[in-house]
Every structure is written in structure tokens, then in C-alpha cells.
Image 1 (cartoon, rainbow, N blue to C red):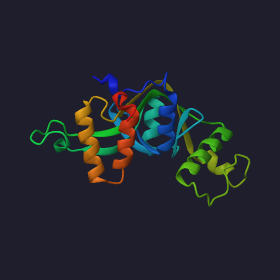
Image 2: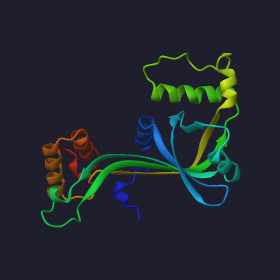
Image 3: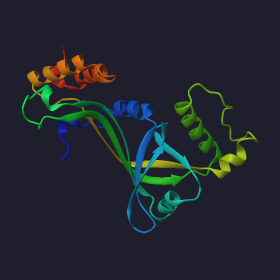
Image 4: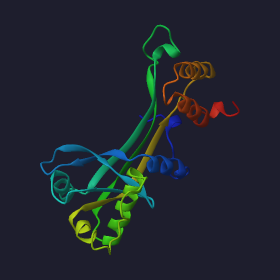
Length: 209
């Protein structure tokens, strides 16, 4: 059962989910393959205009799976910090955990046929993955791109249900939260200081620290 203190409501707090999805570029899509078996595929994605887009070959297992069943689950997650048990308990392993953000989207995948929508989705993906530029902008009317747009598959995920979990110690007592904060500050791994800031942001009892 999902703990309520970690949940982020997409209806009342959509900007949190949107900011996370705009930051991330890699996720996992779960499908039922053509033989009726569950399958999970890692892939790049872009979130733009309130929609998730993927791209890939027009043929292959993924496309066969979608042709047979367009209903999918998609997930993206980012782990910020592994929290050792000894931050809060010198003896037991039980408190060991990790702090992370995750978003899951259940819905239907549609194959995008409109060249302009394909160009806009792929352009957004390039801006995410190659922000330095170094390429001609993708334009559906450009003769260099037109045949390539026809040859690539662009998929749009139309969401029916969105859920999110941002876990940053919301369930901790003040004493335990301070112990974790001190442990992260002392360890000082690349994301530890950011994790402390996220703990302060998402823990209701941390307001005013």
C-alpha cells in the first residue's frame, strides 16, 4: 500500500510532476507483448505540452506489442540518496532506505502520423538530450527531414491515470530527520546536499527550519 505522506497529487500539485518529467529523459514502458507476456522496455522520452512522447523503429517487438494492446504503464524515477540504517539506528538494518522521486502514468499509446506533431516531439527530445544544439532544427517541411520523419515511429502516451511518489523522510520524527540530515551533510556525496534541501521542502514538520 502506498503511504499517503509520500504521494504527490497530480490534480492539486501538477507543477511538481511536470517539473520532474521535464527534467528526466529516461524511463520504462510496460506492455503486454504479442505472445501475451508482460514486457518492460527502457527508452528515452520527452514530456512536452503536457504529453509524453517516445520514438523508435516502425517495426520490432515494441510496435507489435502496441498493435496488439495499446494500454501501457510508463514509469520514470530518480534516486537521490541511499540512506544507511546507521544514520538513525546503530544496531538494526530496518531503517535503511532510499530517497527518490517516481512518476507512473497508465494510459494508451497512440501512433503519431501527423508530420508536424512528429517534428515538434522530436525537436523537443533533441532540445532535452542535446541542448547545445549542433544540428539543423527539425522541420516537417524541410526536404532533408521529411523522408526521415516518415521512416521513424513517434508514439504519444495519452494518460488515463497519473500517480507519483516523492519520498524524502516525511514519515520521520524530528530527531530521526535531524540524524539523517546530519548524516547526509557529513557524507557529502554529489546529491546529498540536494537531498537535504528536498527533505526540507517536502517534510511538513520541517517548515520553518
